[in-house]
Length: 255
Ligand code: OOG
Ligand code: MG
Image 1 (cartoon, protein in one colour):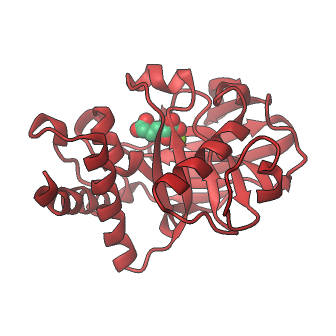
Image 2 (cartoon, rainbow, N blue to C red):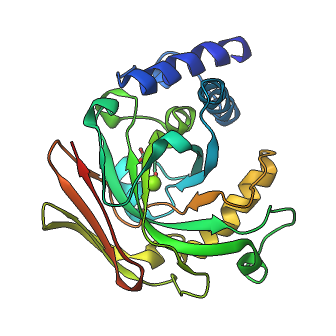
Image 3 (cartoon, rainbow, N blue to C red):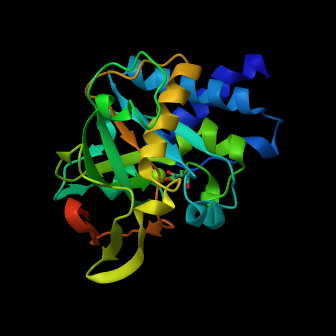
C-alpha cells in the first residue's frame, strides 16, 4: 500500500481541484485507517505546494444525526485551507463543487499555540472566541458514498466553510437551538448539544488529535466542531441561512 499513497492522494486532489467524481478507493484495494490519513496528508501537501495555507482542522461524525445519515460511526478529522473560506453573506461558485451539502456547526478560534494537553478546565485559555458556522461538504466519490477510510483519505469531504460573527469565549455554546433554512424554508433544526454532548468536547478532541498527528494548532487557527444535524444538498440560486440563538445568523448564496 505504501507505494500507492502518493498516487491515490494525487487522484483525490485532482478530483477536488477539478470538481470531478472518482470511484471509491476501498472498492479497488484495502486501505487501513493509517493509510487513509497518510493519503489525506499527501493530498493536502499538494494544495500547500500550490500556495494554499492551513487554517485549522475540522471534526466529523461528532453527532448521531450525521453518523446515521452517512452510515459511518467513528469520529474523523480533516484539514481546512484558506481557499475553502466563503465570506459570511457572500457567494459560493457551484462550478467549484460536485454535489455540495451544507451543515450547521460551531467554530472555535484558537487563542494561543496549543502546547499542552487540553481538558475542560484549561480549554478556555486557548479559545479566543466562538461563532456559528456553516460547513460545505462535497465528497469526491460518486453518489456521496464512502467507507470510513475513503472519506478520511478524501479529507473528510472538506470543501468550504462560512463563519458568523465572533463572540466572547464566555458565550455558553453547550446547548443552543439552531435551524438551517434554504430559500426561507426550514430544512433542519437541532441543538448544539448534539455535538459530542457539548461542542467544547470537539475543541478538546481536536487538540488531542493535533498532538497525535504532530500538527501544531496555532494562534489564529479555527476548529470546526462537526455538524449538529444531517447535511442538506444545495443547488444554484439557493440562499442558505443558519440561525443559532445568541450567536446569530450565518448566510451565503449559491451561484
Ligand atoms: C463527511 C464529513 C462529516 C461532519 O460535520 O460530521 C462532517 C461527510 O459527511 O461527507 O463534516
Ligand atoms: Mg462538518
